[in-house]
Image 1 (cartoon, rainbow, N blue to C red):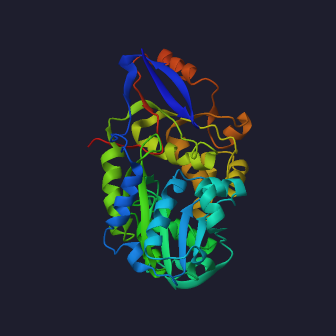
Image 2 (tube, rainbow, N blue to C red):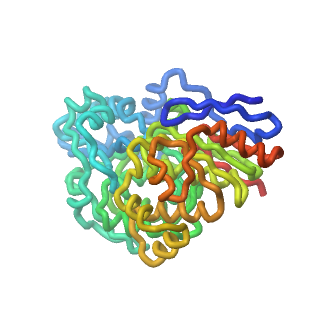
Image 3 (tube, helix red, strand yellow):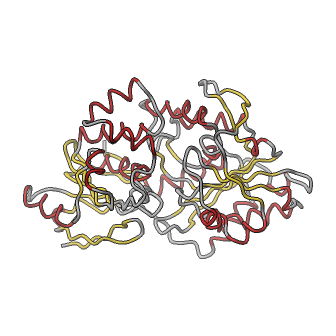
Amino acid sequence: MTLVDIPYGGKPISIDIPEKNLAGILHPSEPKKHEDEAQLIKNALENPIGSERISEIVDPETKIAIIVSDITRPVPTSRILPHLLEELGKGNAKDENITIVVALGLHRNQTEEEMKKIVGSDVYERIKCVEHNPDNCVPIGTTSRGTPVEVFEKIMDAEVIIGTGNIEYHYYAGYSGGGKCILPGVSSKNSVITNHKMMLLDEATAGNIDSPVRQDIEEAAGIANLAFILNVVLNSRGEIVCAVAGDYIKAHRKAVECVDRMYKVPVEPADAVIVGTDESKGMNLYQAYKPLDNAKNAVKDGGTIVLAAPSAEGFGHETFERWCREHTCPASVIDTFENNFEFGAHKAAFIAQLAKKHKLLIHSEMPDEDVRDIFFEPVRDIQKVVDDLLEENPDARIYVMPYGQMTLPIRSE
């Protein structure tokens, strides 16, 4: 037997799987933690890619906007910002000319405590911090794909816009980070929805840098004059193992190379896959879709996907929840969505597509009836699921993905 631990929103669950049935533990090929992650960040800021140092771009009069991610993202913003502010200080930028904007996209607002947690208490007291408001955006252009570029007015008040974030796989934009701080980060609902409609295209998949969604995002970031990014790559423990700064495309691509080396894992599809979630992706079912989507490549058609996601916040999105409750079968969701795109409903449609091909199980804190509304079967004991699966098929092969949001199985050709 092999004892395997998977995260459950930050807490481990232990599972025993016979060695002959364990197809593999799909771990990232992670480098060791850098002894001094602060030095990684400083090196990135001192050696930007495709750009001057940000300290050479600003002066004492420059109005600066720094975009940071909201609480649903695992970005260690509070560990990044002090170094960025120090570099800005080398250009004599004044604190009173800096505004930190929390990018919400179309997510919920943050509490004051969450804001302090995101940026750090010292920075929160020192620098003006505001939240993006998708209803308070100004139109500045249109992409070649027809997406209106409408950006939060406090961003457009700045002369220099800086984006921060982390880079990992994204299920329809290919990768997070880079220009995503602008779109969807600080854009209007109209902009976000128009861009997100491209998620239905075949090329809009995790790990595809040429996803039409990302191409559109980067064009919008150019229209908004995103001047500089500071992005990091994290390992499964949330430690920074790579940092890049500079041009929002060139620096981003350098980090993407790191992500691919670490997180693309070749697989032969198995009978089942058990996938864990970190605290940010495990907080609600809406966020937990991302590791679920990564896991699909590791399992055969008709196989079983077991998702471990506490989902203490429940569905996590009003529209997503409404669509889950209104439709009684996967086909109904898919058919309706194809003729009536609605942001938030896309994850209901994607889960419905998975439910038509796989048996979906979830270990969570959600009520059983809610779980069934989105075509999952609730399970209280993942070990029992494994035991039942092997009783039914003693030769079944099972993968375990402890860090589902970070690992991208790639089917062998």
